[in-house]
Figure 1 (cartoon, rainbow, N blue to C red):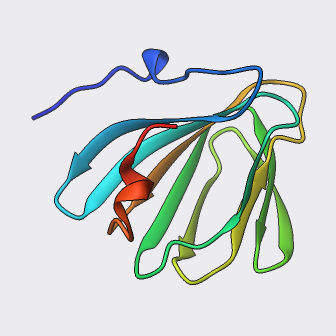
Figure 2 (figure 1 turned 90 degrees about the horizontal axis):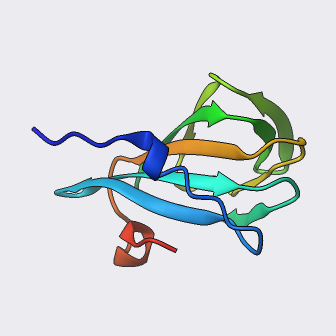
Length: 113
């Protein structure tokens, strides 16, 4: 068993969003993305994996294959890896997203930024 506290992983940066790895096991990875208001994750894909996202704090707008959806705290979504995905903190509070990738498409997806 491994245990992590999320408070230390909710690491906000005024200049850019942050990504903090929570767990990495086999082909799966769990991480938290942290956004200050106005910060965004550019459009991208996660080929060959399923993506599950829980809004821990804050909210914003997720765009999947061109369709925008407002997300707020405690919302959960799932996406297929071939879908085009982006997120922007369109609110006034810091936002943290808890992300699970069922299979790491590339080692770059399992690194802190």
